[in-house]
Image (tube, rainbow, N blue to C red; front, top):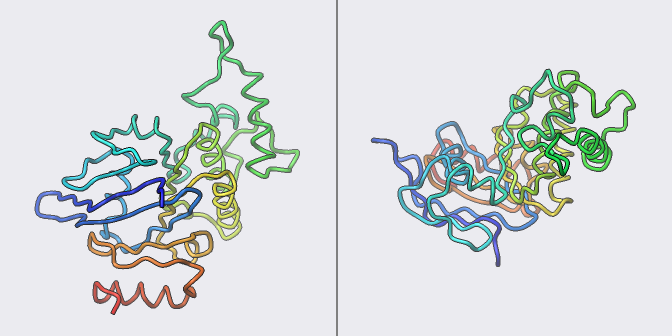
Length: 251
């Protein structure tokens, strides 16, 4: 099978701490993979290697079949790997269209900002991808007026618009209300519909289970198990995660 992302035997140490040990992790095209585990399991370290923030001590990383050497944050972004952090990634005091195009503004042939085009593109995205139907929300709406889930949706759509192939959501439901969380989970479904892949990192297995095709459990820097959500009930998955947390293994 051709994978979007393939990580083989990844190990990473920080001084005396072995953060990752021989981790194998893959993401297929148009797949949502849930990455779960307790604090210190190695989730953040693994993702920082994917995004070029850290270099692995050993192991190999492939993206769309290409082996990645000396991956940097800028190079990862150029390849189409985008991370959507909690809503802090947006500029609250700015308008929706400015947030969508921040740092990647569209310009005219003469080099001037093409504000009209950016607003027009934002309006298309609002209806087609973000699902905004309220007349109160417009390209000139200030982002601070949006709910937490809507802000996350803006960040996801921004990544999709700029051709992200793999979108990483890092604890995206933290601090969201129930209705905001539901809105966010709808946006995650939109990533698959757009033909892209997603890594969904969250402490809440309920949220992960509802959107993921597959769940990978990390524990103490190692893969403790992985499960297709279609093949396992939520209560079974929770029971296995509890056993991992207590014993370090599934059996």
